[in-house]
Amino acid sequence: MRISDFWRLMDDEFGTGYSRVLSSSLVLAGVRGRTADEALAAGVNPRDVWLAICDVQDVPESRRLGRDIKPAENRRA
Image (cartoon, rainbow, N blue to C red; front, side):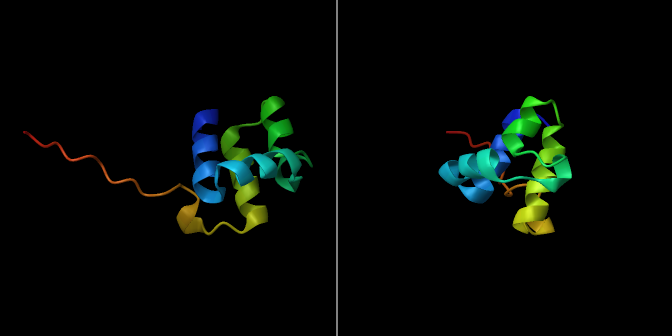
């Protein structure tokens, strides 16, 4: 997972403002007692950080891959 995907998932699940609060203040046992920001800066895989946040915040399995985005239809004018 790329960091950009991590932030898209965070923003979709928690909102842009709150996702930044969580990433800087929520200590995650799943990434050795670091915040998401600290873990990402230390080179932890963004997927592992995302899953650690999901575990602590009780994000349902059905939403851990992000929102379903319908593909754009190819329409001819």
